Image 1 (cartoon, one colour):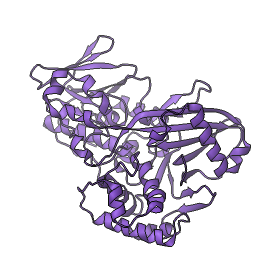
Image 2 (cartoon, rainbow, N blue to C red):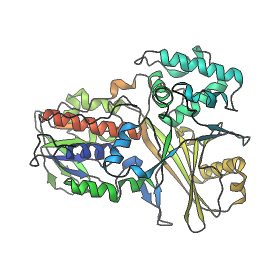
Image 3 (cartoon, rainbow, N blue to C red):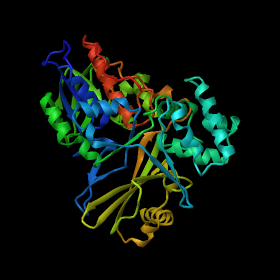
Image 4 (cartoon, helix red, strand yellow):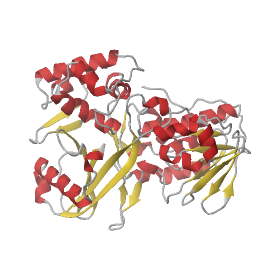
Length: 457
């Protein structure tokens, strides 16, 4: 991509090395800006990253993240930095019920929206009448106004859905996609999940699973690209606060936790919503509703259960679990000699609060043993339970009133994060879009407007 009129003398500091911050850095660097990325941890990726398991030295994902064919900006970012080959498409999804029956969900070679019709009507866990109810509900949802955002559960009940369809269809899809339960979400983002993921394009629903630990997405390919484009990454470098001019019009620098101070022409604050106010002057947050808005967002947790067995335990690469405690299980194969790794994801994991890690682990292992008999016969070598209490914002009705655009009232500062106004729920795609939008906002203010966000399918 040709560089814009911004010269190499202009610089930017990006606070936060998650996907949003990295996308902003890539977008700015492509247009000639010297970028420094500050990350407080010793690794990149944020919530979509990995940590080193001290028991084995293996790289382990904090929580398994997946992409879909409709995630055009995440795909673009990974292709740009040379890491696109690390995502593996899954043309089939496997839905498993407690009676061990499996339905295979795959597209037929028909145009959207008819490509998934046979898959829906072949679902063994819905009755024929349930499937007609779901079809009616989907049609009504797609005809709803895009900005309509009433509470979803009453809307579903008003559109002929029953307990089975809500629990076995709407809940199965939406709890995983939005990290929130049906009784808490609004219609707007539920509609977006089904419209963009299942209806608009026949390739949109294809799930893409990283073929490597998430930390590898931020490995050699990315770091080589960043170095070649004059992007400096400083890990273990936490920011204490942004220094803003007294009148609140200009960012003057970043104060680090070690007392040092860095300065640049442009700044991107790419941190979770619950960290924004901590990194800005209190008087600025009090004066500007823009910066205070993030404080109104509520978090939703995710729990990930990591299990290592002494033998293979699944014949499927993954399974979507229906009427179960876990929502997804991923078979990551033999990760070390004699060690076979499964990861189970429990989205919107509020019901696990108050339970100890041992009890959570045991409940998941018992459930898997009932679903997949080889699990019951295998020896559990070790386990790890990880809960991200503020994994995403909760997509409650009307949540967009608290999601701000990336260009801030401070002239040389932009915000990025999946919680900002992206038009997407809290996903890796939303994070990348926010970073691209933040870079677009700063480039426009620098007099070098550029289009970074990729179009939908």
